[in-house]
Length: 170
View 1 (cartoon, rainbow, N blue to C red):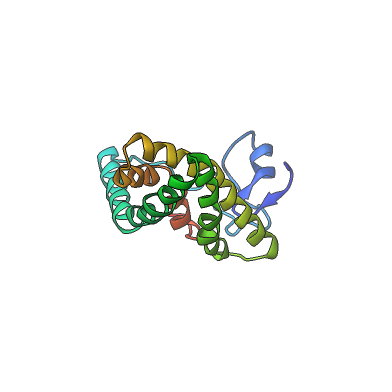
View 2: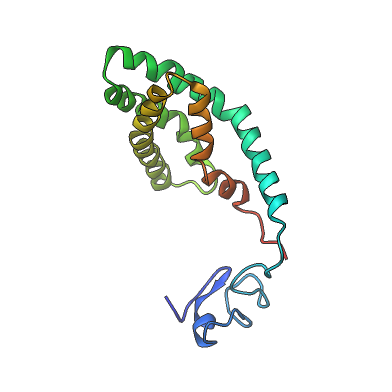
């Protein structure tokens, strides 16, 4: 890998400069003066970051997670849990969960492989997280509100998805 340049990141120049973040003259990089490390470090107000993130968390919770978990955990998984045990209900719920989230695999660059991997990934996530959600739902005596808060906290990818494709700030 070292000795070759990747778009937006120059491994060869990084190694030759002894770890220096200068990428000047790196062929194939979008900008010859762009640093390998991205933005210039700057001071960040932690209170402003925390308030901003809590605001995004609250909006996401109110508009998406509460309603999504009302359907998945509050209705489907709990009804299946009355007929089957908790884990069988969670695994059955994982299948429609995966198909409902599958359209997210069509965002960005789409190939047959990316769509297949997307479905497999959502199915795997459903198999891992739906039983946990079921246990949490049962432990909170059926509180969909608590499950929706848990769902909000388990989505670190949302900030990355919002930033995907945006150019780095200079």
